[in-house]
Length: 251
Image 1: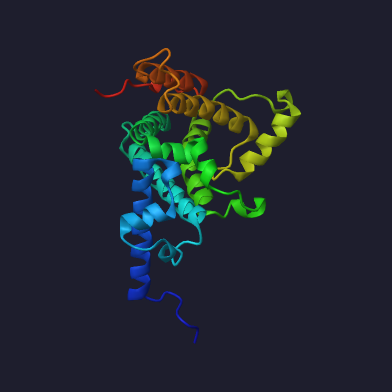
Image 2: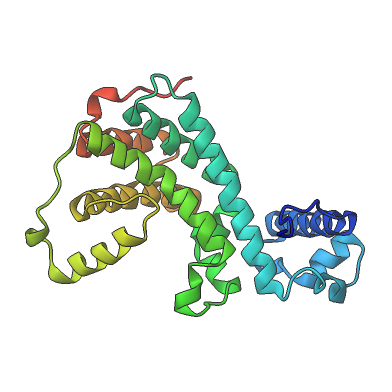
């Protein structure tokens, strides 16, 4: 008879998982209070009342710990986006994309330190690059694909349900075409190359707008970036053929 594979989790394993979760939570608090440069094992251990070497029983290095914190943050943000998608009314992909985009901006503008670790140069300073063939297996990479899949799935549904203008592959620069083909193959939702081009163009505009606001790069012109963000959402709706589904944000 085969050995059962679904064994109950032992008390020791539960305790270890709880401690690892507490370490990650403490690391996030240190990140928020001291910034990414303060994200040192000694500071985290001090917050928890343990020795720094004790952390190595749970994480191989500072980079390993940050890797798991990044995965946690991606998971949290993805949960926020999925909740926004689920509460959109009516539940059309165009209206859901509006809700998800606004939820992304809202999370970003209320979690500056976390956003910087995920999407800014801060994360590059503490995450060492791995082997290219194994990078996709990292917890942060897998969680990041789930995050990106929320947007990709909505764009795919819009295209399948009603379509929108996409460039002919032959009209794209060969260098761009090759890169897009490789990127589209890695997406959690399969997209034709032309659709992938439009999706990437829209993401650059959405992410660029949010990133500039979070890092204060719009203050030279805007005290309140929300009207500009909404204008960008309307423009994205036009690019995706769902401009008629635009709804002003609830006040």
